[in-house]
Image (cartoon, rainbow, N blue to C red; front, top):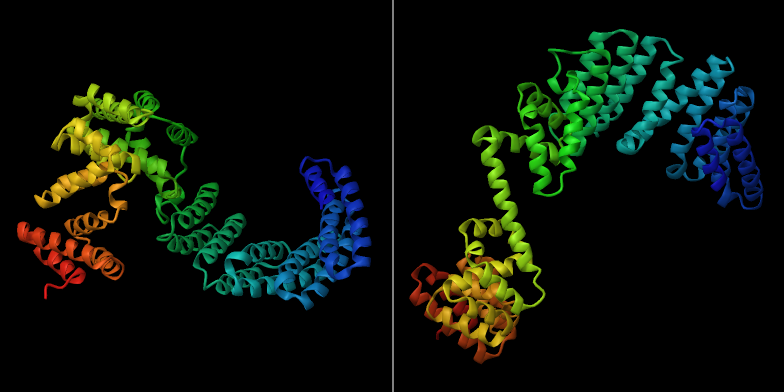
Length: 490
């Protein structure tokens, strides 16, 4: 295998003589292995022969290449008889190569028969697994095109397209390849009609599916100047390299300072009608690329609110996140409290609260947001004491529950990492769940508590829930229901 790889690399670099030497040696080794253990090594010999035929053709020895690929096809036929699933694709590929080698030696009649067999086999494979085997079918049809008359070739292509009816994306890709054939022949109208059929499949799908087929359509349409007015703009309009250079520069921005520098340098150009049009086309061709969507939305925001406003807000957000990051990175809770005190006004800016709420799915950010909320509701000292003292956290949470102050309860629970992990924490969790209208999860947790907790604890929880129902009529129904699950009133 190493010699095969070496030969392939040498061939890619143009050193065909060295590649031929390496793969000839590989075939010799594979022959000895296959003679000793055919079942294990015959596939490797067939692959090596396939590579050897390619290298012989590269050096102009078409007669030797034909002999070699003929042997490879014979081996693949034998292998496919015993294990069709594994080796029929190899046989299809080898038959395509055999047809090419026969054509190279001038025997076009036999080559046509061989490629016809390859097309039939590839079509059968494509019917069973279009995504995996469509490339074999496309390659076989391309070779057939070089050997057949136009009418017969078109019939083979249309039959191949029909064979992919269960996979519209592979079918669309084969249509694009067929459109390329029409365009190469000079049949522009037929090419456009075929591209239009492929475009219909590109109307919806996953971003990666849309991107692949649309870029193929765009390449054929723009290379041949096809379909203006009959195909979508994204298919027919060339996009300047300068637009992709700007998109790449935007994608490379790391952090607000680089973003601001990019906008100051390029915003005026990007906001021009021509650039915005090209960005929309790029978005259509590369829907899986979030950078294009992000840049377009940012430019829309600049159009609505001005560049100066967007830059000022961006700096403010960057400063707020930098401040929060510096706070989070303080190594001890004592230093965290000191930082909080020193930057009280900045950290308690409503703008900071809004930003942090948007990022609160991160556990550490979520905890610090809880500390801010608790400090505003009580005091900085108490907020930081709750963080390090689970008993104090439990006492403050209980007091908040007794007064039905669920915002305060939520702040305590967010600031304390350990509170909700305790036995009493399950009561606080139940209350917070019903406060967030997550009654299904609350019922599930209540059922677990009812099954596993001691009777005294279940009764205590039920008492707390009934008191909450009395103080908070808006929560009376779910709180009362959970209380009944834990400890029926009777």
